[in-house]
Image 1 (cartoon, helix red, strand yellow):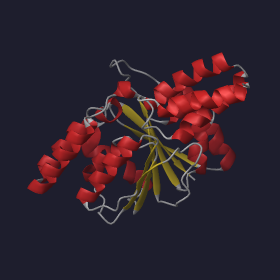
Image 2 (image 1 turned 120 degrees about the horizontal axis):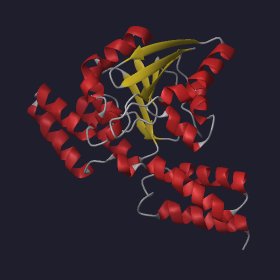
Image 3 (image 1 turned 90 degrees about the vertical axis):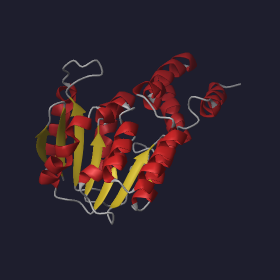
Image 4 (image 1 turned 180 degrees about the vertical axis):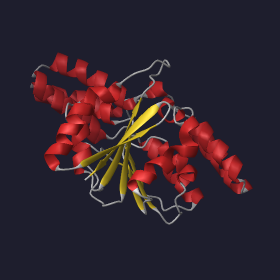
Length: 268
């Protein structure tokens, strides 16, 4: 059996595994094939690919009980109580550390971003996780075209369930934003706390997504506090590259600062 055939077996086994069954097979394949191209060695390929897939799966960031979450959302919407709906949404995205960190910012977060981007009629939410559950804090009409993408099918299923209850068109779909950047044009794209994750997957992947998403304004957020509540400067690691690419393309940069997050808006 050739190494390529063995690699195909490893990929198939990973795709079928309990841990990765919710992850888009295209993503799993891309990670393995890319690493095999770099290392030319099956053992090294599998070792590095597993580490990268572990970060893409990111169970350690937290996930809700999806069945229970749907029940809670349905009960809240049946009540018609805005406060109850918001509390349930908060309780769900609070399980995930990335969206939980934005809880204290929600009342001002989108107003400040939209003051730079303008209030959109269409949105692309890249590698969205549970961020669409903050829709009620965005102040957008239910007629908005909200395209949400993630490689995790369980996330996407919950988001579409929520959109249906909310009366927003169900436009969430399973998609790898790196291998298959969305081509539908929207007013604004969100790339919240994912630029550096894409760069960890493959150097240049974060900028590849920003450049190729079909939106004239891309809001890229970076945490300023890490998972153990210590200050961090993740933007500083990537800022020079973002600035150089914007200068090369004649694009503008805007900064929106919050207590525990900083958002860079790329204006194409």
